[in-house]
Length: 311
Image 1 (tube, rainbow, N blue to C red):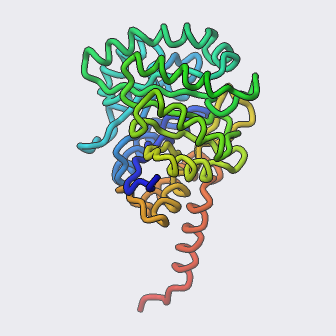
Image 2 (image 1 turned 60 degrees about the horizontal axis):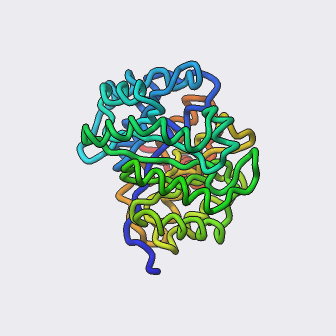
């Protein structure tokens, strides 16, 4: 299959990336980060999560964040909504897209949200119905689609089952997520092809963590079967509180460098994203996990040092 000419990048750093930080990230910092990402040209940014502060205290300021960001026409600002209370909060805050989430692994579903896969999807039915009724875009995310920290291998048939269930809920887009980063290219292609038999390929997305260093390879493998939507996190922020050892999402800077080098358009300014990654890394005192980000920042610093003094 011919490679896509354009790829949509969903920037998940402000939500999926920051939710696992132990030290509270100030609201001002979150707002500044989202504004920088907006200016960089993203058409979809995961900005907040309307979950119980008891479970994810880092996201307790979601409404304030959504109220203070500088929105750009044409950019979707998404929010994670686990139930009707979360949905109502997200809508009140002006979310353009709500995200529901289930697992392809029964063991992970029990550990993560204390219910079976079938029960989790049933819980989301009212949220999905309300989103459709109010004309709000609905995205479904399937975690542990390539492997589970508790049960190990996840059958492709389990992923397909959840894709089918989310399709029936009316999801506009469905994410195939490698939550613990164990996927490899051939397996990724198998899963993506199977998912595409149940849901439109142009509305499937890849969400890859880089725990085993396979994320870029898995993105390339997905491109080869026609997937053209990917999630990434600025500076490689992230992890999963329910999957010990899982590192962050693939770094946005690294994905952009690869795609642009392949002649694939994204509409995103790589330099601006590198600077946003540097900003958030310094603001939260965290090492920048993007190799491209670190390389370009070092290159720019060296160029600056080498410049002659002004007279």
